[in-house]
Image (cartoon, rainbow, N blue to C red):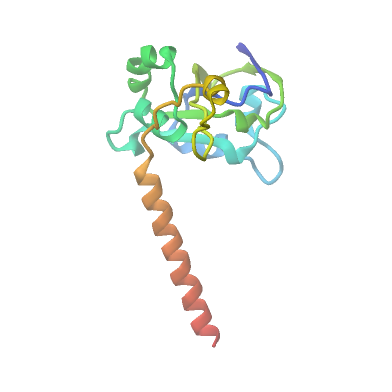
Amino acid sequence: MMRMHINGSDPGMLRLFHLDLPPEAIERFATQAGTGEYPLKYALGATHLRPAFVDVVNIRDLEGMPLSEYLVSAYQVTGDDFRQMQPQIDALKGHVVALSAQAFDHVSQDLAIAAPLRWVGTFPEEQARPRGPDPRSAPAQLARPAAPHAAPRNRRAMYVTLIAIALLVVLVAGTLMQIS
């Protein structure tokens, strides 16, 4: 069993876990049941876990995209530790669980991580750059941190979302036509 402290006020950390279960057991383990049973939460030893922010990734579904590239695209993961661990991350097989700070509901808690989870690493996420023009006054320029480079976006996720919206529009239109 591994212990880990989650700082609820630290918004920009991604925690990556390898999930050692057969494929047919993944959904049951990673989904909160209507009765409140939540095996993933129990294996983490978490007091708060928001299912909407739990990302269970079947590495095979990435269709050749390295897992490290997915993490950069989906979470804008950065840092020297991440770059050094890319070969180990990309060598993982099966399923992984990616948990951003939002998954822990911004609540400080102590985790007691147990099987079938194995902690892979904790990596900083690139912080979003505020929108709007850069400040022009000299004091504002000195106070503003250097702008990070934009990370590539996950285009496949965007296309899937657009297709889902289009299908939803078609279904709603068809339903309305049947009603009238």
